[in-house]
Image 1 (cartoon, rainbow, N blue to C red):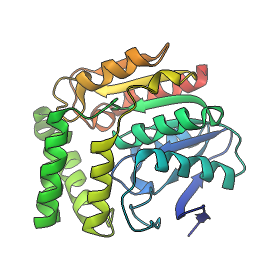
Image 2: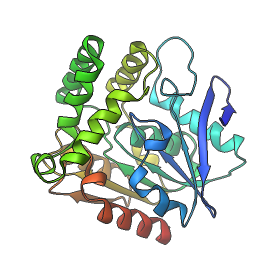
Image 3: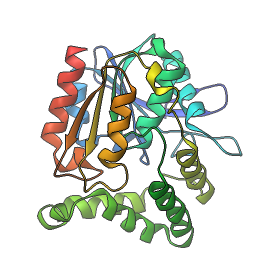
Image 4: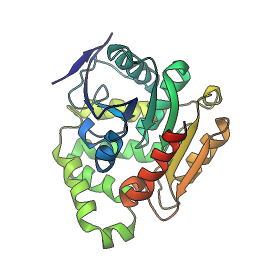
Length: 266
């Protein structure tokens, strides 16, 4: 099991493919679930690096709270460990985008091009309420929590037309050991609630593409993505109008195409 010994933690990571490096960082998922439907496609063009964040999966974490700035520093140290000066970065799943933004803000020379999936500058009161509720629900019943979160990630049309996709997502979230302890999830949720890059996002100067679900994505939706696109100079915003939070699984062909085209151009 490859572990990178960073300053504060041991970080689990995996590599596949060959070529220029592509660092893939995602949200509440183990490394092998990070854009799993696109992994082979990405590996045809790039040396793809996926990892477990601190407080997730097989990476260790110190006691106490965390924040996304610290987790962005973790990624810079992972690149150091791998002797990578700079990389294209795909940050998705909401939280992965926020950590990737911190990497680009705090270590600007390390990111040559950045794709942000479902980002926000700061969680609004609605999202804070969701995250607070999810902390309580997961403490009561992690399986029920997994099923409930899945309802926020897919549209009613996906439940109707792609029931296996939705069902498998719920089972994976419930069955894997994403969060070693309940406190691990609480620290990640608290970091999301505390996230605020309204004053610093504009410092990102590398090429940036933003993708997001449409209005049916009540977690982060266009209400969150548009201010990010306005804050980062030259950022491109692509909205998957008929999809929800997991738009990359609901419309995988389009998602893979826009990401690869963007990285090929940058």
